[in-house]
Picture 1 (tube, helix red, strand yellow):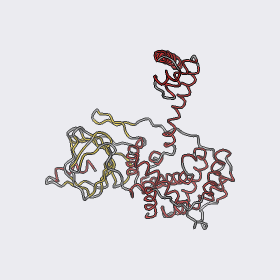
Picture 2 (cartoon, chains in turn purple, brown):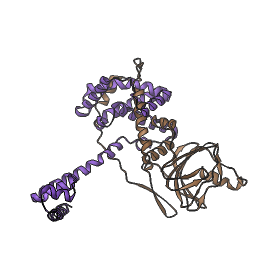
Picture 3 (cartoon, rainbow over the protein chains, first blue to last red):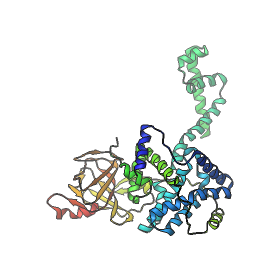
Picture 4 (cartoon, helix red, strand yellow):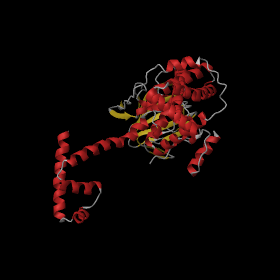
Amino acid sequence: MQVVQSNVTNKFTGSVINYMASDTQHTDICLWLDAVATSRDKAAFTQLFHFFAPKILHISQSKLFDKSLANEVVQETMTNVWKKAHLFNSTKGAPTTWVFTIMRNVTFDILRKLQSNKEDNLSEDIWPMIEDQAIEDEPFSDHIEQKNILAVIDKLPKNQQEVIQAYYFMEMSQEQLAQHLDLPLGTVKSRLRLALSKLKEHLGEKE
Amino acid sequence: MINHHPKLNLLIQHVNGELPASISAGIKIHSDMCKQCSEQIAELTKHEAKLSFSQTNVDDAEFGFDVDALINDITQTQPEPEVIPDNKPVAVTFRGVTYTLPNVMKHMELGKPAQIGKLSRSRILLDEGHIHSSLLRIEAGGGIPEHTHNGYEITLLLEGNFKDDMGEYVPGDFIVLDGNHQHQPVSEQGCLCYTVVSDSLHFTQGINKLLNPIGSFIY
């Protein structure tokens, strides 16, 4: 417990934390997981099994004080690693963290079944595996929206495209724009107005 | 602003899945509303994972099954399709007022609402023995008589506000009280709380007998 606390303190004071797992190990695990995800590679899964299963057994035995339950945790966790490998995203966290959350969730549900006789699998609601992804994916929908707009802008006459792009995407003021294009301010304003009403028309058609 | 957060040791136990479902659900509700705690939970999870999988003295693992056969079995199963979680909000109604409940409660069964005065309560049927969880609603102007606790009482304010002699609370506040505290919460505008109580409440003022029904009502 103390080790964890001092590590956390280190994090907040900004110093580098040394972990025992080496970088090569980390890369290997990522490669194995990827091979399982993309080509259902049995050899890669066997490697993952030999890396994780003994550790999971050890942790579960010390937590559950029961050999057969600990074995159940190993089997259930490793089955989930196989089944869900394609849902792991290495840009969103370490593979060890991902396997740890699977193991923690499996153990939690087994314990709850034992203690409260409930098979409600609440772990998925308390620690959703794909929730963070959903939150981070939100800008993506904006991205699609933006692509739509860009396609519509492409349909505008060239002089209108110019003002829209400069005004909205480069965030120039109308005055700067007039100067930049060497046009009277009034012309810039009317082109913007015209371009906007055309944009609305095009976007409206799509709905 | 949220002022009351779960303590670090509670967060570590949460990350390791060592708390009762009721308390971990309370922490989940809080961390969904509190960026600071949600980031700390992510950080702690990373640490615990590193610690767990950096053990080196596990070569002598004795599995209770045939490893090769298990690997064969597992690798014949189909990958799981990605399921988008159903985040349809769940709601509860107390005396005509409907509240949307946190996502973490979507698979929790609720008991029938019961009333005493300005208090309404619905049990959350988690079956955790002496740990009782409830949704507790205080109507505007209502409160709970001064009491202390034999065990602990965790209150997660979901909506509205209430105050006691220690201060005012806002939605998201994670309030832990035990036998060292005495309080008399009142809610001016009404509120809805998620509560986890480990033992019956103990009223500290003279008319204990009269208040006993409320004690068991809230526990």
